Length: 75
Image (cartoon, rainbow, N blue to C red):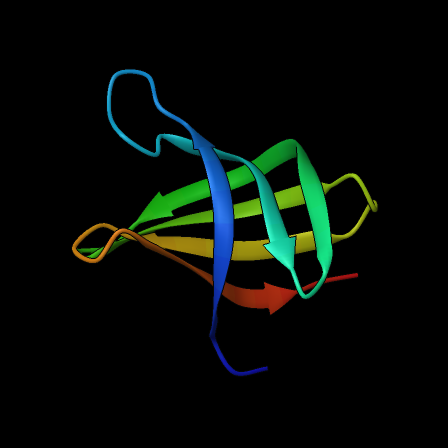
């Protein structure tokens, strides 16, 4: 799967876009039920999460451009 830009609504607490609450994939908006893992790179924050469709997804937040991207759709 190619990386694609998505829309996400994120909780902002101590910092902006601290963690995603929901995201739009195609014409579906999915709620985040659980953050399974989270890791950082120099430019991105990655989230492995379970959505309300029970599937696992990996999305990332690109801090410099304030963009969210779908990295992988899981099962």
